[in-house]
Amino acid sequence: MKVGIVTFTFGDNYGQRLQNYAVQELLQRRGADASTIRQSEPRCSLKHQVKVFLVDSFAGKRGAKRARHSAFLRFDEEHIKYEPNYSLPDFPPRKSDGFDAFVAGSDQIWSPYIPDSNGAMFLCFAESVKKVSLSASISAPELPMEKKNAYRERLAAFDFISVREKNAARLIKECAGLDAEVLIDPTLMLDAADWDKLAEAPAVLLPRRYALKYFLGSDSPKVAMFDEYCKRAGLEVVDLLGDPRFFACGPSEFIYLIRNSSLVATDSYHGSIFTLLYRKPLLMFERAGSQFDMSDRFDTLAEKLGLGNWREANWNYLESGEPKSFDVEDKLRIERAKFDSFLNRSLFSKSRKEIVYHG
Image 1 (cartoon, rainbow, N blue to C red):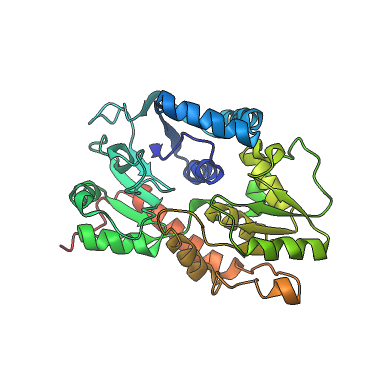
Image 2: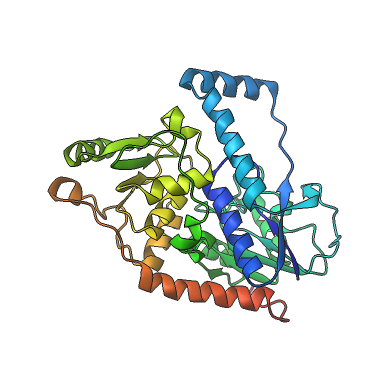
């Protein structure tokens, strides 16, 4: 069975690449010939290139950025199987070319605010084959009115739909009248032993005991509490994106840094997921500085894995004791079974068109 994976492939983003690997691994374990359709490199204006150059130069990250990109290219070469004949969005329309099915997901491929979230991410090019979304994310509180018709038409062509957040399921129901199953992120389908196989130590020497700081948004006021706790606990802070030495790390080093940390503080969804998988104490921050509220993915993750109020969890320990790790194994076992069931029904059975229109 030949299955094409459609997701974001351009950009050096840890969660993006690791969820791609997870989907590929899950399909290959079931005997599928799975490959990812690579995105064409977007063309940036000269003005944008100059701006990026100046920002990177000011932050002292030009060399680190090149090293980081090289690390991602190395990870791709070693671990991601790309379809050699095609790229998005130039994939021949209405031509399956030997594919039996296409999988859209995971990641924020259906966000109405990301330029790369185009018709290709809804598999509009595919015809006469199964079309399945696997933990796709909309990552927006609402759909813009001017895009609802396009979403309705594109979603109706799917045979099976699963999403990553409860809010995404609500939006699909309201917009297209379709029931979408809410599943965990594919990275949670592999356990720590699976990810250990990819882990690599970074080139820079690590402290004996350290707390990993990984923020994609602006620093929260609570960061001061985190820094103070680390001083009291004798933990050095490794700033993954703020320190050029660690900014150069690729996906394999990212896994290693979490696995060997004593505490992780992050506003990253996948940073939180890998911390949970490795049973490390976790401080989850709301994303600061983002234009859109993306907290629903944390809300859904917390609900599915029994984390309680993730906005407050562990913060009380910063003043009175030591942050704790979360025990998610029982909940995770249930959610993995749901994911397996969906994957088997959607791709590895003869059934077609499970989703029903309720408009």
